[in-house]
Image 1 (cartoon, rainbow, N blue to C red):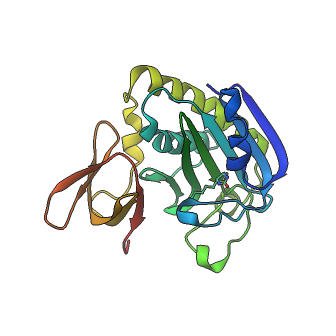
Image 2: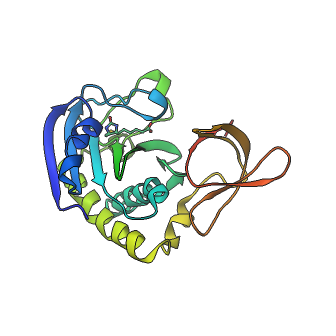
Amino acid sequence: MIKRIIKFKEVSSTQDTAKRFIHKQEEVAVSSLRQKRGRGRHGRTWISQPGGLYLSLLLFPRTRLTSIPLLASLTIIKVLEDYDFSKLSILWPNDVLLNNRKICGIICEQYNNAIICGIGLNVNIENFPRNLSNATSLKIESGRDLDTNGIVKQIIGRFNPLYNELQKQGLKIKEVLNYIVGIGKSVEIITSKGVIKGTVHDIDDDWALLLRDHIGMIRKFYYGDVRRLSW
Ligand code: BTN
């Protein structure tokens, strides 16, 4: 359970700042107004200008490590619903979409018994570089500026009870399944063992992704990144 938010104006990456707190073995959140070297998945850069929300949750989960990315996605959905946004969906397990465009990216990095879950939410960003044509922000979608610090607090407020439930009761939070997009669509899954192409068959009761591969076999993935193929 996160009881403390440590705020910075500028850091290299909140992921690295959070890492420095691991030795204290305390679950904390680190936020910053901007990052000099924000990072995304697959070694990509996460452009981190002022106006975005940059947050890392330092966690010591006892169980269900592989569910943390999806839990973070569900948290963001709940927070954005609190702010009256709709048309929200999750591209399993890491990306939150608003109107089918990426509004939030999540990266989870593991260091022994610690997981640092990094959340980048496009809050008041007004435009994106051309190569990020599928990105959007809350400001672009709603026409209004939102208080980034207020959203950070709300994220922690929404995350804590879901996280407690996940740790105590296991995967009873079925609600997440309502938000998943991509069933029946072609994707590739990038895991540490390689890239596998197929069609999303379903999401299992334990939040794993079921993929039908090219020979029709159903394969189960507890983690990995999904890349959409032509949809
Ligand atoms: C992705 O979609 O590739 C994941 C992006 C994650 C970005 C966040 S911003 C806060 C935290 N600090 C970082 O350097 N990265 C994550």
